[in-house]
Amino acid sequence: MGEREERDERLARVRAAFEDSIATKRATLEASAGAIARAADRIIDCLRADRKLLAFGNGGSASDAQHLCAELAGRYVRERPGLPAIALTANSSELTAIGNDYGFDRVFARLVEAHGRPGDVAVAISTSGNSPNVLEAVRVARERGLATIALIGKGGGKLAGRVDVPIVVASDRTPRIQETHIAIIHVLCELVDESLFPDPEQQ
Image (cartoon, rainbow, N blue to C red):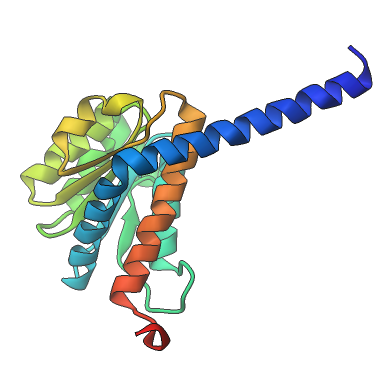
């Protein structure tokens, strides 16, 4: 294959990846728009009541949990007060101490025990819906009276039936699921901002 053919092949792959991502988002919109709106309602009610959000996941989902909390505690688009949101993935000393003492399956559950209170919201993020430490944290969250939301894919896995609001991305491909999770996170942040801090010029 010549240099031009290689460039054309790469261009085709770029187009295919974007088209697949767009198609995944469209399919998820059709299947899960209502769930996304319900999740926003839970988060808005929680924050309006001066409660907090806890988010967790593994790997890329850990990054997504931190992204969500950064947008809430910092700023999404409009200027407004910081909102109480904690990514349970962010403190390496906590994670390694708990993992060492209690096992990796308990790392998030222990942190839910430490920080979760009735009326808080737990946001579990897992591409498969089957991560043992995420499932265990959701179990503890429900026991402690937290509302539970999941961002998942691949049909939802075990997690879909164990949370109050499952948001299932319509794909079995991890990269497409993660890309769509970020889109969902941004929509949730937008809905939170619009509900809690409405623009007076748009009222």
